[in-house]
Image 1: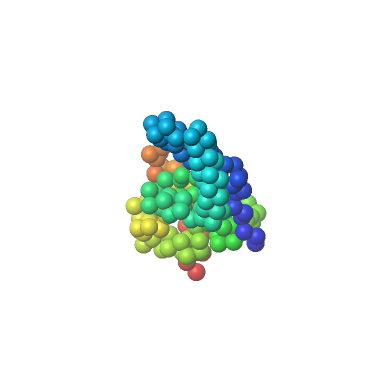
Image 2 (image 1 turned 120 degrees about the vertical axis):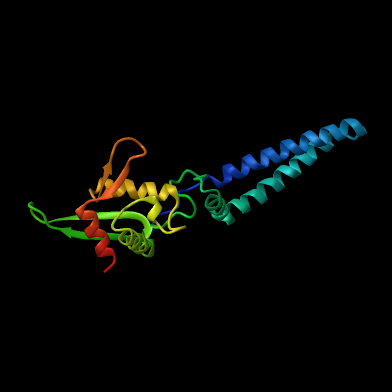
Length: 192
């Protein structure tokens, strides 16, 4: 299964913006110093040009080199999706996710449901163990500490509701959820 590619970024554009900001700041300071010290007129222009070139080179290298690690770390600490990629922290690659295939039987013919959760195989097993230990109660409180962020938990809920593995207990944003028979079978299968 191929990994989901990281979204492309306009690194040159971002570096140019950083360089322009550095050049403008240096130009303003150099112009003030030039006027107060009665230095040659070309000094602020030259210093702004040098600062802009250095700013472009340094920010370009940092933007390419960091590969989002600093943003992911900051997201993990603050528990906020800063880069608006839908994941707090390092996004999971598609190859790291476990695609669960469960064959369920009912009055209707046999059918297969696919569940693509934003969790690794180990995280899914830990979630299933916690839910089983809580008497098959599915809530944020029963999840082990640090298993998933609030945003990831909401995504798990949305996927499981969509697949009919959970149902809402009430109305509104504060409504709880409970496992359906199919949801319980899926989690039992994860523990096998």
